Amino acid sequence: MTQTASSGIDELRAAIDGVVIAPGDSAYDEARRVWNADIDRRPAVVAQCLSAEDVRAAVLFGVRNGLEIAVRGGAHSMSGASTVDDGLMIDVSRLNQVTVDPETKRAVAGGGSKLAELDAAGQEHGLATPAGAISHTGIAGLTLGGGMGWLSRKHGLTLDNLLSVEIVTADGQILRASADENPELFWAVRGGGGNFGVVTQFEFQLHDVGPIVQYGIQFWSLEQGAEVLRYARDLIPTLSLDFNVVIGAITAPPAPFLPKHYHHEPGYALIVVGFGTPEEHEALLDQIHEAIPPRWEFATPMPYTALQQSIDEPNSWGNHCYDKGSYLETLSDEAIEVITQHVPLKSSPLSNVLFYRLDGAYSEVGEDETAFAGGRSPRYAVFLVAIAPVPELLPGDRAWVRAFWDALQPHTLGIGSYVNAMAENDYDRVKASYGEAKYARLAKIKAQYDPGNVFHRNMNILPG
Image (tube, rainbow, N blue to C red):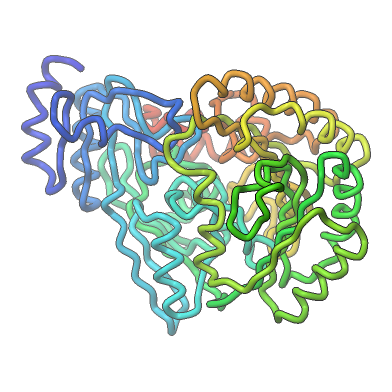
């Protein structure tokens, strides 16, 4: 940090209502901490903002002092985009108020809100918007890049349900963007990530969901992997949109509902969630059971909020993480061979592979209606995730993810990746994910709102 910037910290403290934290302050180490323990960076200053005006003052301070800027919401970025060495971390996590209008079925959420806060506010009225599946994720990064989860088949991506944003741009403007106000900016933030400013408020469309949903998990051994994947390939696309099934290559959890001799066993699971009747859900589980009897299974009704928290624990703060993602049009026999060869090679019991089916409402949105990267045709989103409870396990499982991803590429759609599942900012991969035309449009909008590329700690789009 420059001498000018150091002496200006008091100026920043005077300019914002929030808290400004610098190295040496007692709160510094907690303030700089992020979800992925593999990321350990030391900002020159952290501005914990309480309003859009605070964010505006922090952005202008960072630009004026030549500081690299990172934006921290839920701090869940796998790549560590939410923190920076020797720069300015703008922390919006205290902007976490959520209000719901049950008449219009709309929610307004602060830019630092987490999924748990959005879910809880909506469920007070039996409402929800599609979101991710880990409740301590911040809504901002998730929404701006896409947002996939249990409701994606029924109601689309999180960004498909975004109605407006309040955003602070690199020159300190506080703008509203929606379909009828700054529409090009609104198009860009729905998929273009944090490239265009700091979003301080989101407005979402909500849907009738819950409060109780149906949950089931069925588990098979590693040896049954190919059979399970082929069966799921044929079954899942035929299901009503009241069902969502996530395929997982996981390690059985040490859960109280599970006999101890199954704890920590690697294998394949189908996680079957039903938004319809209990009878319909039970019938589907029975159908799967009869086709391929699982080693164990568990089913229960649960609150929608509990579903949203069901994988929080294995994805808790403090693990060392890395991921890569791809899209598969289908689970071809060739792809299944790659999957079943690589799944057993992981070291950490928490590392996993997840397959999200994307169709229905996801595919009803036009390719160019939003800036979302990767396409809207029916497909599977594949997440290859290394999660190491101790740092010594990460190098091996990071290599496992990379080798797995490389081997899978000949069988993917070949149009890039989901930008929220990129642990590295690879310019060529980012550009390939958006495609030439969409990237060019994004670059033009970037040049209008952030010509100096102030906001580049993301899957970066260069100003056109």
